[in-house]
Length: 324
Image 1 (cartoon, rainbow, N blue to C red):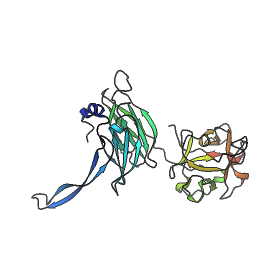
Image 2: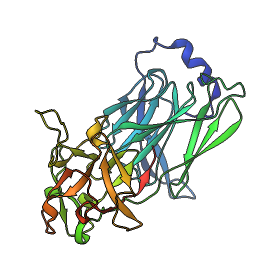
Image 3: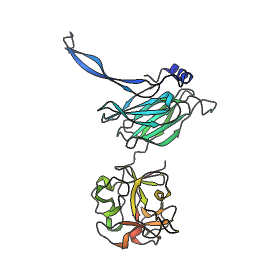
Image 4: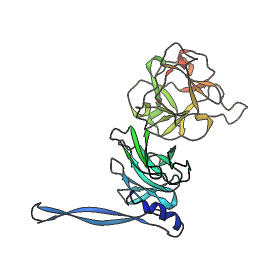
């Protein structure tokens, strides 16, 4: 499996549909003693064979060694292998004719080159879903169906991905978000906190003294505010009955990140107490503010949605933001 074997890029599409499944061989190194000069030699032994998709081209291992990711050219997918069991645990749909794959040094993201549609799919390894598709330069004609990106590598600091483009003879450089997750400070220095370190959808959000725990870390990705530990989004509990789906007092919770408008937020400096690093966090569909209930400064006070007033219980420091 070598991304430099360019002939495979042209050959595989002509046989799409004919090959049912290919496999990944798992090789273990065994020490063989008695070789003169080195004391021992390494004999590679196949210990298992893992069925994956059609025409697997490459493999990347997460830094902790727990998972292997391999693109399947003719299926437009990536197989995720649990290295502890050598079983496929997830299959991730990506772009057209994926070839190369690399994992960020922190293990949080996988980058996959899609050669036929000239894109790179970004996989969140926590959820094994594509969270972004990056257009990549292709041939001189600008034909986006041409076979463009093939190989890629990520810098040791995780800040950039370098992608080789076969048709155009170029290398594209992708800037990777490396901002740290951050607490969201609010009333009297307390922070947004997921109740009891909950991880399931529907868990409420409260104010609590800052401890640095994972349930207090947040990042704004596009219009969503995400807790990286749970991979859940800050969400408003919508009213089941009534004409207003977002009434005053609607509770705040975490939910699976999706396309629902209740998870859409914007930061508004214009509704502020004058603090230059913060302001109001406004729910986009309702134009109402994230609000500390009853202006109570105490651990365990729940968050709610309320008409924006500019009061201190609606003022927050903004989390790091990534526009994806």
